[in-house]
Amino acid sequence: MRPPGLIMNCPEVKAIHCIMDMKQIFNIVKINTSMDHGVGNRYREWEWIDNEDLIPGYVFDIYGHDLTIVSVDEDEMEFTYRGKTFRINRYWQVLGTPQYGVQGEYIPQQERYIFHFSRSKEDICDWTEKHITDLVIRMNGNNDEGQIWKNIPLLREIIHEFKDVAPFRSEDVNPACKAHYISCILKNDYLVKTDTPRLFQSLCELYRLYIDFGLSEDYDEDLNKEFDKYYFRYVDEWIYHLAWIMDDPASGYAQECWDWFGKMLKVDIVQATPEWEYVIYEVEKEVEEELKDEPRGMGFCFGYWSAKRAALERRGIQWRSPSSMNPRVMFD
Image (tube, rainbow, N blue to C red; front, side, top):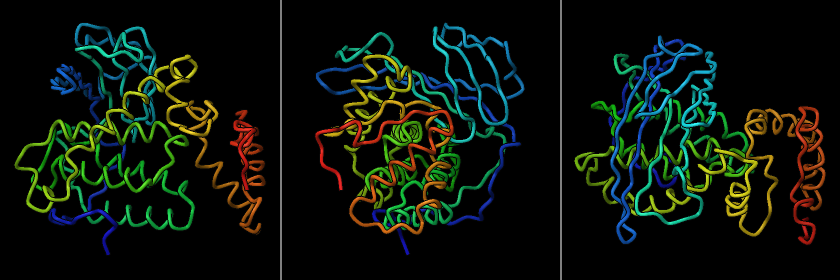
């Protein structure tokens, strides 16, 4: 059984699942984009830092600017760079900055940075397409059952498996193959963008990196036929808005970007905060258990939103439901 939209053209290898106590490197990718009549040429540089150097107070010179480690543990690292403080999950997050000095303006040249952790290039970890395909099949089943929230840990696992590539590759995996998987995940709506914006951002940033680092020989006949070569245009637009939202959810421009994601319906900006994303999976699991015997007919959404609001409030998060955010809209 193959998930919809996926092709199986990479050799299956023995699954070796690497864990977080393996040596990691901190990757910083600098992206310079030159725009000429709407056509972008992207130039990339990258640096990586071994985990032995990741100690609080340590300062690195990264592309002419100080990057200072504030705190670091097995799960997350907090650091400052170019006057901003960032927090990144070491397991699954891929963090992208906005184009510096730009808010909603067209400029001929843009500069941004992407941060993520990966396994050390000296470690040998085989990537298995069968394992990823099994995860995607499970996500498809969760969608069919109307329980998209169950995809959150599955997507984090996929990102953890995927994010070790750029600029590294092996005989068994290439960036184009991974980009195809991510585009299928995005096109099939295996996550709610406004429920897990950092997860969504990580997928988008990885997709764009894989497009950048892919080589012509990565595209075999089947993949070349299936691959949407223009999908990056949608992803670039998402990346632009997400970067500003993640940079400072409280800013006025971040609110404009957030409303752009909501389209016709307004969504509480609290969902763009890290505090929300840290707990939303556990909240959904708790609400599912609480309402498991309730009929899923008309009016269920109001009971669901009430239980969800209470669960979030117990965790110190004040949340406004879709009905509160959109008082003139009829929900059933």
